[in-house]
Length: 568
Image (cartoon, rainbow, N blue to C red):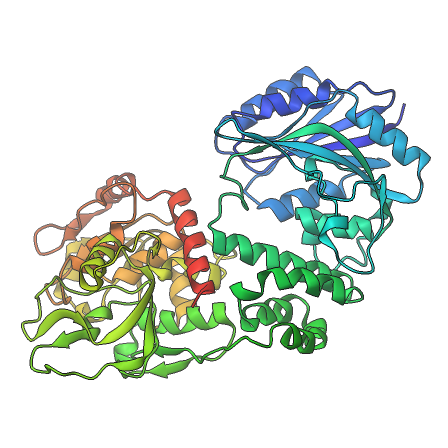
């Protein structure tokens, strides 16, 4: 008998839950054939072993689709949907499960008998890690059997159905007209997509369980990122429908009116849907007319073509998607981003009545270059009023708390340079060199280079354009650097690296390096001092093994940094 329905089990590192999920699908009592495709996005725990066990036990029913590398949720699920050949499909994430053995039978029967319906959903139980339960769709909705695409958005008439509850009619998907893959993947986007193709048939029964772990892509994000994701999905759906339902999605955006400005999302529209961005721009301004977007005056120095300063300008421009004002005046700048700039804002001893600028300075990931009282002519007071969104590390955070006499536990910690791998695409770069050497500009032409006894190495010039520097770093298996942002760029690419010392010319010595590494779980390995030892071929393997920074740590910090930039 031909398969009638495909179940997509979407999983990544669900070793504690995946078995229960698979069993809940296998236990379904149905009078039709179904196939189970497990979309395993290159799990790094024991999820793959569990899935393999069931795939071998039920080879006629379970297909384990294991990705060779982590694709991320959109590509993983989209590729899975493209493989569907059945009339209907359902999806469930590997940490959720179905709790009614007749769930699929009920939903397929309904869709068979209601050709006007594009999908069928039901109620869901939400379980959190503390054992608390709540119902997904509560009684304060107007509950009815069928819902159609509304002419006006009213939340009371907008019944929610969790992704684990849905059975979709596959024929409703038009891949040729689809503008954005995310319209089929993200929970709210896929809801609107299928509602635009027909009615939703709603069953007011709990037949699935959503495990709210607080570690998912959405649930694991800080509040600012959640808001950003929610807003982008509203805009994504609006663009998917060519703005034919603009009033509905604009009403939804009003919920977030006080949390963002136009610039953030005009960029989102322009990047993905250029033509329609122009069309919606006027509506945006009508709905968010109270937005007041200030020019970003970024503290910037082009001295010696410093890699960190250039990266600061390019990276913030990339994320804000608007021109920034380069400002070399500490009194006139309003943002400090990448770099050890905060010493410049310390008050000088001989200026007892130094006038403060009225405009607030935003500190977003910067740090100090030297310890307290390093400069004899400066005191531990700032010449500007500040708001602190982020600091490079714990040392800077503690120092700012002392200066400002306030708790800064809510700020982001990490050097924004860790986002450079998201700015420069190096995925096509092939490995050519065993080791890349990056010298701080003060170490140029250092005689200590003679102490590096390696054959296949590349000297990387940090004065080159950012893209060239990044692609050179990506071509190496290991990086040795006396420049801090050479190390940070390597970390962003998950390339093992180690600090080397050529001289004592770097201002502040170890201070800024210790600050940067303070945000990671393990203490970083001591730097290699070329004034004392040589580096030989056999040493590189040991240096690689001593590299402690985890990919998961970098990802976590990157998420927090993007949230921080969102609030600049």
